[in-house]
Structure formats: structure tokens, C-alpha cells
Image 1 (cartoon, rainbow, N blue to C red):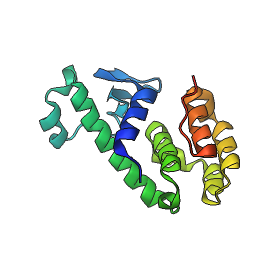
Image 2 (cartoon, helix red, strand yellow):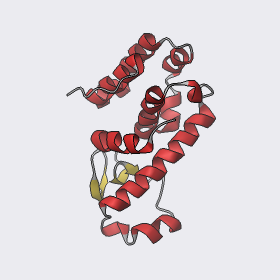
Image 3 (cartoon, helix red, strand yellow):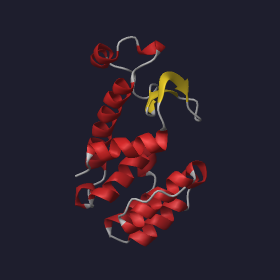
Length: 158
């Protein structure tokens, strides 16, 4: 199973940290470590922790949201990808990272990549990851995720 602390560190690396609400490159209102406020508005429970988030949040608040997002995405992956739990931790993380960036529905559009992953054909799955608009739009991030899919090893590609 994915180590949530590792996922937090890697998503900080990929997403960055912004403590005030902003609009991401796709025009979605976002805060913290890539928390999409349009798709996942701040709940009453989260407001109790974050306070008046409209004017900014703390790093601790951003990590609180991020951990909740990771748990939600892992649950969505388990429900939507039948073989998800059979994957090793690193390849599970690769899918979680992609779902974090694209949403679960965006990840599920990678039918060929997921098909290869289900058959442990990692080199082919990685090639499918790189043969996509996702790879064109995210550059080095997609290269890191494809390498992770191919090898099962995290590597910083700069």
C-alpha cells in the first residue's frame, strides 16, 4: 500500500505549494498542493480545520487537504481499477499521481496503458503514458511517472 508520507512529498514536488487560492493552468480555482476547489469545494468539516481559507491557509492546512485528497484518490483507484491493489506500491503511486493531476476519469481514459499495466507489461504501459497529451502538457512529471511505471523505481528527472 502507498505510504502517504511519501505521496505527500512527491506531490509537493510535482504540484508545489500555494497558500492562497489561485487559478491553475486549466483555469480551475486551486489552493495548497493542487487541491481543485471547483471539483472538491471545501467542506464544513474542512473549514473547521482551515478557518477562513479564502484569505489563505497554513502549510499544515495544505497538508491536511492533500492527505484527504490522497485518501480519496486511492479509494477511487481501488474502486475503478480492478487490479490496482495487485500493483506494487510504486506503480500504485504512479496511478495516484496521474489521478491527482487528471482526475480519476482522466486516468481511466488511458485504456491501453491500464491494459498493459494489468498484464505487467510495464515497458508498454510506460510508452502509452508518454504517448499522450498528458505527457506533452506535464513534461518532466510525465517522464518521472512513466519511468516509475516502467521500472518500479522513483527517480528525479530534471
